[in-house]
Image (tube, rainbow, N blue to C red; front, side):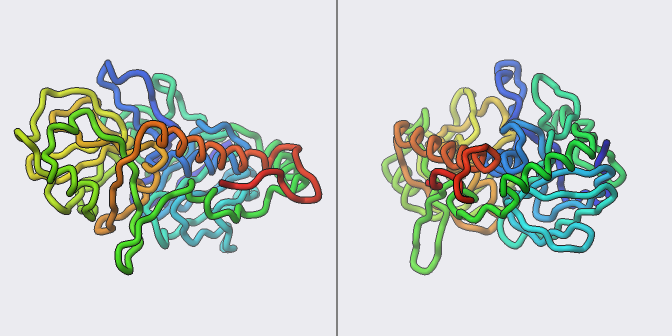
Length: 345
């Protein structure tokens, strides 16, 4: 019961929703950078939201299913083929034993997710299967996948074949067509002829440490991702954000989405592999609903920020949760006349 990695691509890791509750011990959360797409891939095959998936970067892997499996792809869409036959993203798919899946470079976006029915049951570390690359723990031996690695699968081939029959009987094998459900209801800002992801953020714990001119630069400026971006953080380049008495503070807690401003006046947005504390002032915190959009940007792409409040941040998270519940309903028995009840937000 296994998946053999023939070509891992630039960076493929095992991830789930992260290792929560250990920040006080200096343990990073990690987990999927685009948590929405990871959840979506899991739901498409009938998994729990937090089951382990494969996260790929820019280009996907080539792998062989040693036994029959049900799988789905989500996130940054890329040409994908099973035994040379093109397969879609955002749909449950069946792989016979011995079949080979090859995922090419993403057309747009940065990170793709592969979910297999039953999850990827690598050992848990502190309650999570997420890979922490810096600390070399979790995931598959605490590292990115390599050629020749063999991943376990949870479901026997005959069980997967039976589940595939159930999926087809419930008519849930069709690709997910709703754009809002695929993207998680993301917002955009138009700037002349350019469409920018608009990241909503609440004022950070050191908002008052920034001069009014710096606050205005943050909320009205356009920033671009530098080449120095990874799963830990996105470093941005754009209008300088002026502080009142400098950017240095006594180190305090950092969360995913925290926007630090370094001594050069440029923002740094924390992602899944962020450190637990930091010594730069934090002007804002990007809301959880918008972090997936940032995780899909490539170096050189532009982004903009706008301020919101906690009430609207909660509403945005609930809207995404409603999208996911609707996708989960595809595999429920709540069907009438070939259409699923409800509409995507």
